[in-house]
Image (cartoon, rainbow, N blue to C red; front, side):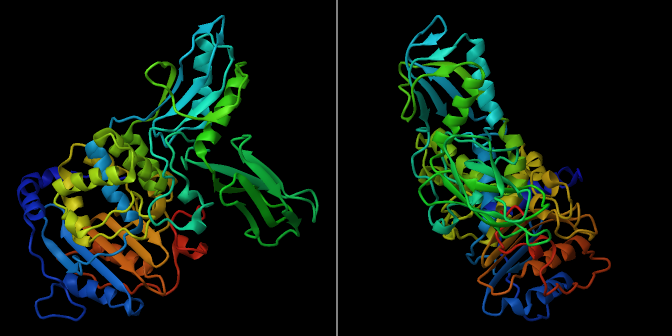
Length: 528
């Protein structure tokens, strides 16, 4: 990774010119699609890329600015509203760092209202979540161990799952119904569980292996093991060498029934699929109950969905998350939608005592407005960009990126952005396979964004002259993906030198990198 001192080198300029440009509404000139007499060499080369035929009948905008001075180097349609997909997370993550702070931690509590006598709790045990999107099975095991250490051996009552810290709106505004089973569209609950350290909260992992012979049933396992989800497996083992993508695991609408169907080849390696859970607070409580049993703590009652009477309850054990500064890595590198929405509702709860999307998005808008974003010209409908109702501008994104360079937490936030061409999953993230072996590799840091008919890239890159640039590019409503154009822009910016301006390299018309292996353009597909 690069750890340049470009911010400090230009600090005096940035403190004056950039903030004046952002807050004062710097006047910019849009660059048209045809060459103009006063075009700079960079504008000419960028125009060549954006005049790609894939943009006929579709929309594209690109804004490039000097990160130190705020000077506009290129602006095509920067004031137009487009759908940013996961570039929405630039707003959410910056607001979370600014509002909650890098040291903010989520927590999950175990409480009781009844006394513990001779190791027996004479009443219900409450498991209350406060929005932690990174809680793992091992964290619930840790809570069970703390109860055992405190001397609890039996609960003569129910285990109450309490997710009332958030409201009960589980899915974001405009989220697609056919994504219900897909792990990037999990239900938002203040009490939940992630199956592994990629922290896809509200999901379970379905592991499958072929049977011993062709025609045998495929073997399946849920991770973590639980009694909430039921598996109906009709999948069979196919001949060795047959397709591996014919095996499907999906959850039925409104139920915790996972159906595994299709075929999987003899001799195939373990296949891993993530599936969302219906009412994840019950899933979390079930995993916790199993952890209690493993510690010898018996719960005589059932798992109930209710609210903790906090006025009379006392805390028996607490689990804390990693700080927000560390959560940023899986959140931004892997474009974790659920992290974004948990942060939005938490900002609403902390700042407005309203744990809702509306309140949280209001907090995000208030924060980015202080950073030079004209909030009257954008619409945030969720925190992740999964909603197709989100509309922002390239001007808004670059204004935000310029301004937050002055924040004390900026370097931490900057380090959490995906890094082009770096194959390490928690470094390159969603850019791991893009722009590899080019001047942009291990240089360009940016947030990706992808939905069907929408792709975006916004962040930072250093040109060949050592000048740091901020940029925002969004493309909408195309028939053939222009992602290779997006990459060509990134490579051109990284290669740019005013001393010896390079020519733009024509983007490939074929799918490239991770895109070639994906049946969909949605960036959250694990194979991508």
